[in-house]
Amino acid sequence: MRLSTEAAVRKAVIRAVNKTPVLDMHTHIYEPRFKKLLLWGIDELLTYHYLIAELFRARPDLPTGVFWKLSKKKQADLIWNALFVERSPVGEACRGVVTCIKALGIRPGPTALEKARRYFAGRDIESYVDKVFNISGVTGAVMTNNPFDPEEAALWDRGGKRDGRFIPALRIDNLLRDWPGAARALREMGYKVAGGSKGPDAQAAKEILRFLSDWTDRIDPVYMAASLPPEFGYPGRDDCTAVLDRCILPFAAERELPMAVMIGARIGVNPELRLAGDGVGRSSVEAVEALCRQWPEVRFLVTMLARENQHQLCVAARKFGNLMLFGCWWFLNDPSIIEMMTAQRLELLGTSFVPQHSDARVLDQLIYKWRHSRIVIGEVLADKFADAFNSGWPLTSREIKRDVERLFSGNFLEFVGR
Image 1 (cartoon, rainbow, N blue to C red):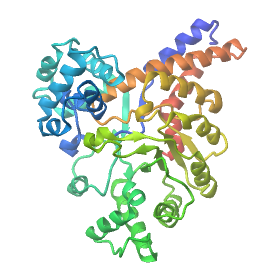
Image 2 (image 1 turned 90 degrees about the vertical axis):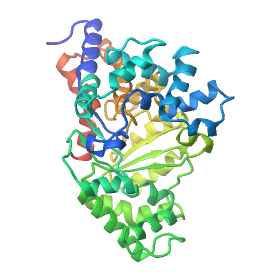
Image 3 (image 1 turned 135 degrees about the vertical axis):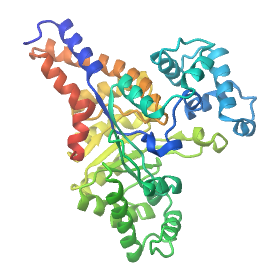
Image 4 (image 1 turned 120 degrees about the vertical axis):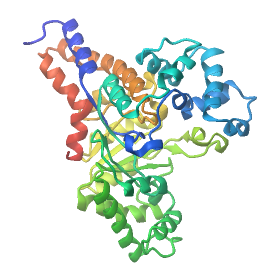
């Protein structure tokens, strides 16, 4: 049945956005068998690197060396007092903690920290994963799996019962950001890679391909992924281009394995803050265009970190069918920017993109990141569907539901061939 009024259209959109399950296509969370690599609970929420950075703005008198020597519990105490008790939690990361504890049935307020700790004490992680997925409306989450991490590699070797809701992705930053270091690591793993100071030679390229094949067969990733600096250019006369052209992109084409590229992170702007010390820079959309143009048989999932890149990136996506834009990454994961980016993408790309991913590092963050994103995405979609309706296009609730499902999971699954 066709919807007869703008109000009915808006209501149908909001209903579909709130009820449609999400496949979260990029996270840093792990399935429960990975034990301590899966972060969860109130102290992990509070010591998330976004909040650590905000702590040092609120407490410039606090030496970073003192903070890092504290236990996680005491770090969380400091952050709670500085950002939730002495100030109101109006920042997006602070608001996220409030949303999480409220969704778990804990009344927010200055005394909520100890209540939250009692809530998590002795809780079973398997059942808690079920609870978080249910509250957030997430049916599956793509992990970030780094074969260069000895701790994680050992866990894959150990095996164990898989949780099918957690989908592997093969992270290959080391090969592109630091070829000499990657070469050393590959040698330690038993691959016959010599040198490493001048990019991969023919033997090294063959061994990289063997390494990629071994790990792809082992974990069955949905895509390969790399986070790259703003200076990333393609093509170039550097190790990164050499590894891409000789190894990674031929492998991606042969195995029909998409490549997810996240561009714009400046690592260690303030090293004293560790993970909280990374920054952002404007990147080259021309490099993305060149990748798509020179490797038409490879599917590229791309997101960029700088707001200044978003319009040009949207225009590029109109030109290449092998380019899929995804998410509002990291520093862009704020409601005002999500609203702008989602509206811009809808206006330039229709519904042919992935509007959001959580980038969650703590399991509980699935709750707030998707709850907050659904609110903004719902409002923008309601405006755009209302515009179509007011222009004379007939709409039904079923058609709206179809398009929301496409945005929340279908576009990604179709693009990666799953």
